[in-house]
Amino acid sequence: EIYQCDWSSDVCSSDLSASLYDGKLEGRLTADAEGNRIALKEEIKAVTINPLLRDVADKDILEGRGDVSIDVTMAGATVGAMKRALAGNAAVELKDGAYKGINLAETFRKAASLGTKSGTQGGDSTQKTDFSEMKASFVIKGGVAHNEDLSMKSPFVRVGGLGDIDIGNSRLDYTAKAALVATATGQQGRDDAAGVTIPVRVYGSFDAVKYDIQYGTVFSGIARGLGGLLGSDRNAGKDAGSKDRKS
Image 1 (cartoon, rainbow, N blue to C red):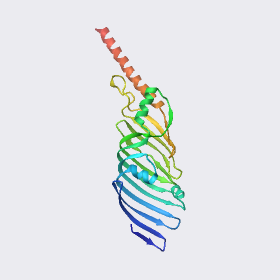
Image 2: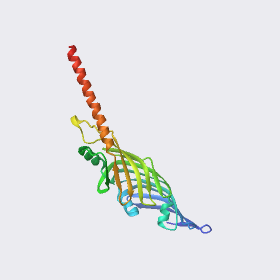
Image 3: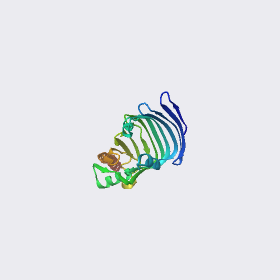
Image 4: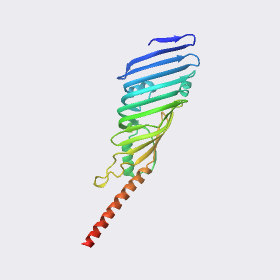
């Protein structure tokens, strides 16, 4: 990179361009010695996200390939201070990947079979929720990235949600809402839990994430579905009985 500096104001900037993690980076970095301020704007196209996150953040939480955009500023005398002062915007769009730590579809199936009503569990690096696509954008203020438009799709679940990722303090508090598309199939091939939405609170430190899953929503939804089916069966029986009496 070639740095261009204005020595009268102690500001240096550089255009960035690189091929990395199977993708292409284009951007610009500006550094202001006064107040240790840094501005970074990057577009990373078709990047393989897992090795990028492992190298940059030492986190093995996402798989997939896609685009990442970052437009942020930070300031401070230490790395920690810079994280807590982080501000700006970011977005990610991935295809054919996975979120690592929990398998939502399998967790819901087990809950339904065991009759579990609620539960909190820790993350499990061997478990993952596959997705065909995932999109999310973030507004960052004071080191906290706020998101309200998560969209993650797979053959089994659709996930939306909102919450905060506290980069400065390495914590998160996020509520995802997972809607079942296909679950353990009921009698006669009916998928009685399909369409039920389960809130999942994801919280804690980055190194010890916990999942609080509100299973009660699953069973109330299934009960409503079964109630409707039973009601239809009863009405069908009444109609058949009425026809028999008339004949």
